[in-house]
Image 1 (cartoon, rainbow, N blue to C red):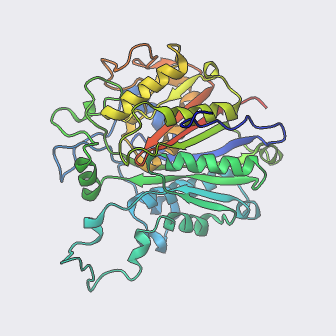
Image 2 (image 1 turned 30 degrees about the vertical axis):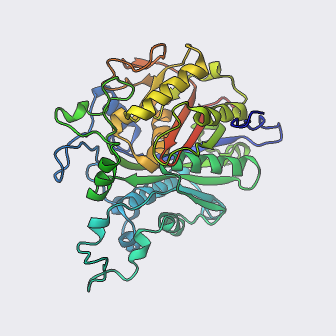
Length: 418
C-alpha cells in the first residue's frame, strides 16, 4: 500500500445486520413536511434574502420557527442556541414519527451532530476588556456553548438513554453521526438509534466569521442567484439553517414492530485530509478515499449508484475539487448529480442530515430538482441536473466535506424491497 493511500474497509460480512430508516423529520428553508418540500421544489420557491444587518450577503432563513411548536413549554429552551433548538425540534418530531413505546425508546441510542455557537455578540451584548460578567448574565450561560447540550435536552424530552455520541466535525458532523449510528446497529451494539442534528449561521458573528474566511457570497444583485454550485461564476456559499433527525433500526427489529421503512443505509466512509484547516485537498485524494470506503462497505460499484447528492457549496475550491473527484470516480459516466444547497443554503453542521431527508423525499416522489443557477459548469462530462425531471434513482451517495479537512460519504437505498 502506498504511503498516502487509505485502504477501504472490507465489505460487510453476512453476519452484519441490515440497518433501515424508520422515521425522519426535517426543518429547512423549504419547509418541514414532504408536501411543503415538494411544492417548494416544483415552484422554484426559496427564502434567500439579505439579512437586516448586512446588505452585502445573502442568507436562507427558516421562517416562523418556534421550538415550543415542537416541545410545548420547555424550560431547557433558555440553554439552547438557535442551532441546538433546531436539533431538539427535529429529534422530538422524529420520536413522534417513530411510534415507539417508552420502553423501546429508552433503549435507543442517540447520535447528534453539533457545531459551535458563533453568536458571541448576541449572547454577550457588552464585553469590556475581555470581561463578560453582567448583572443579568444567565448563571448557566456555559450550556449555550457546550456541544452536548442539545443531546442532553433531547434525551430528557424523548427518553432515549442508550449509547450516544456528539459529533463536532464541522460540515460533516450530522452525516457522520448517522454513519456512526448505522455501524453501532449493524455491529449489534444497539437495535435502534436516533441520529441527526441542527445548526444556524444567521447571526452577525457567524456571517463575520465566514466573510473573514472568504467563504460566503458577498455582492449585489438578485439574492436568489447568489448560490451557484459548480458554475464557473460561483462566488461562495449562502448560509442556511435548520435540522433533521432519523430513527435508524435493525431491519428485523423494525419488521417485528411493523415500522414503515423509508430506506436502508448501505455504506459509510470518512477520512481526514491532514493538509489545511480550511481548504480541501485540491487533488481530492482523501475525499475519494471516503467515497470509495462507502462504496466498498455497501458492496457496490460506482455504476450502481443512481444519484449523487454533492456537497456542492458554491465555493471556488470545494466545487473544483468535487467535480474532479466525480469525474475521476465515474470516468465520464456519472449518475445524475444534484446540489441541494442551491435550494436551502449551506446548513453547515446540519447539511448532511437535512440533505439526506430531502433525498428520501425526492426519491419517494420520483423527482430530481435542478441545480439552481448552474449555467456554465466548471467541469465537462458530469451529469449535473440542470433541469428538474422525473427520475427514480433508488440508491443515493451523499458527500460532505468540511473545514479541517473532514470528509464523509453515506450510501442509502430508498425503499429497498424486503
